[in-house]
Length: 318
Image 1 (cartoon, rainbow, N blue to C red):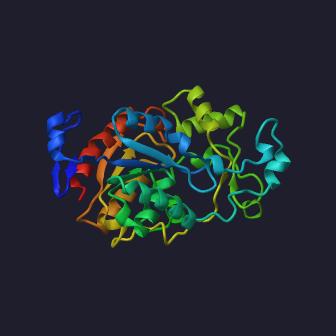
Image 2 (cartoon, rainbow, N blue to C red):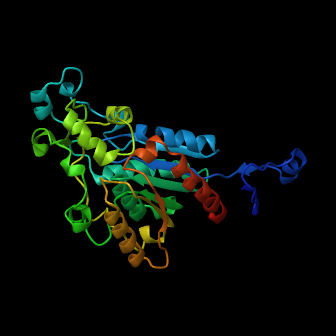
């Protein structure tokens, strides 16, 4: 969309203004949506690298955020690198200690505020990133033009813990991988897992749980980007959808039908409860045949959904 004063002209993707037309319009602003992508548990913005690249190559603005304590701000336990030290891994205090939902909301809101100066913003989250999306939507709906949940937590009638213990999550393989918390989480200040395990049985179960439709090489590369520590504190009130704020933001849910970590029954429960909360603003639902992380490694079909969404978001922008 090109704007001049109170006038606007919508251009189809790939269309351009001739030099005389641009001159007649005077000062021209090119308005485009910005995609802000939020990662899930135990990882960082790197998991969105292929998605950001594909969005950029299709002409979109996109950036992936690192939640507090993740990415280059992560504190990696000394015992995690090189020849691993099991004792150190179980006892070394975590840099994630004390980081909460409020910190995540503050970090993402700061990014949204800056991005929103340049046009509409689409906030995208996968897996545990959905908790952040909902909390941000509750706190700052004016900064978000569209929400996109990708097999992500979207708590409405219950808390994350209650959903995890519910029947819809009973078939999840995530708790059966053989990865067990290292040390006492309350002592080290975080939930700590050893993603750099070389145990072939654990790797087989991880493959089945998060990347059954991928190769072992892809799994190992993905695990290499994982971080050992994740925050313990989740604000259960802040991460439950509020109809008055979160509920007025247009939203999309991308179901991953091959996800064995977040069962499709749980994804569908999130959608149904959210739609019941705001029947006049239901989810737009798409389905991808993908495991929990395959869509991030091979994002072309996922980005096609975002690409089509961008045009509608730009057109609807005030």
